[in-house]
Image (cartoon, rainbow, N blue to C red; front, side):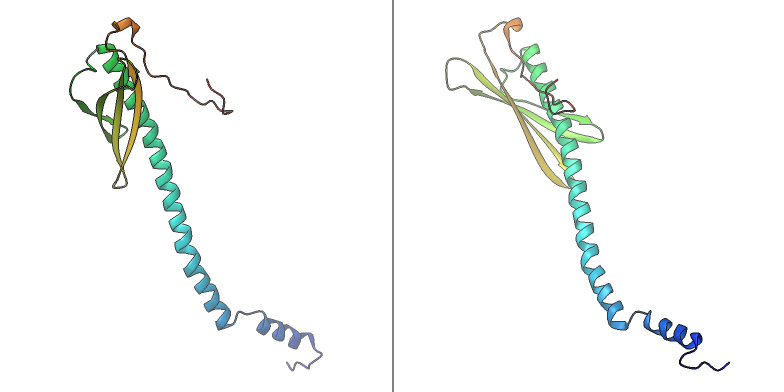
Length: 155
């Protein structure tokens, strides 16, 4: 079959030749992908780390609050060194209680420092409250906590 320039057969061949990518366009696309893919993967890694740290900090805050409450209720918060470990959700949280004088009066500042590792990096969370050494067990205050609800308000 012989295709003349006005014949639809030759127009289809020309269209097929012009619809292909050139080598330069293909290489430009590969270079673009070589730049974009590592940046996207790094962004996903950072987002993953932020999520894991946030979840671990939430657990560390509960550990610190439990330790403070327990020490205040048991009355042993005046001991020289209180330290321990708590394993929650396959992660170990190391904690210690620091007992410092408060600026005014006889109050004491109790601080619980909780240490935990996420992806090989150590993080710290501190929670503090005031305690009165002269108060009886029923007069001792526990730390105040606020929980944010779904709309951002407090529960």
